[in-house]
Length: 104
Image 1 (spheres, rainbow, N blue to C red):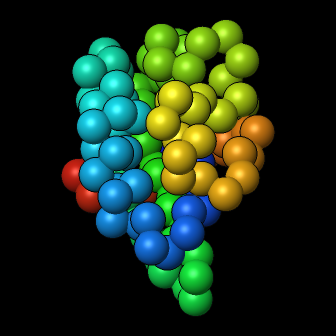
Image 2 (image 1 turned 30 degrees about the vertical axis):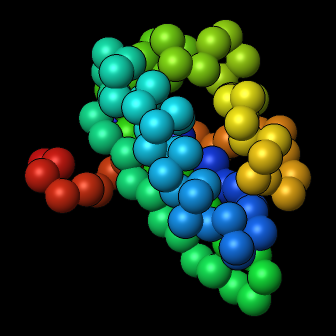
């Protein structure tokens, strides 16, 4: 299993709305892509900023490619992200999952 990890920052005042948007856009796309095993959304509001970390879990590089395209390291953004994000981090990170709930 492979974890794909993305980080984004919004104004704190838009953090709740961005969470709703994430569920309706990127998270929905994760879940409908074959080979996706789930996604975690983490949020930390720090002062005037909301930090989001998405950890999506995948069966293989091929299943990530079905979601992300050929440039696996490139972050994938959706049109309305511009209404929320303060910056656009260009890359994501991938890690082999060595331990997880239910993984033996």
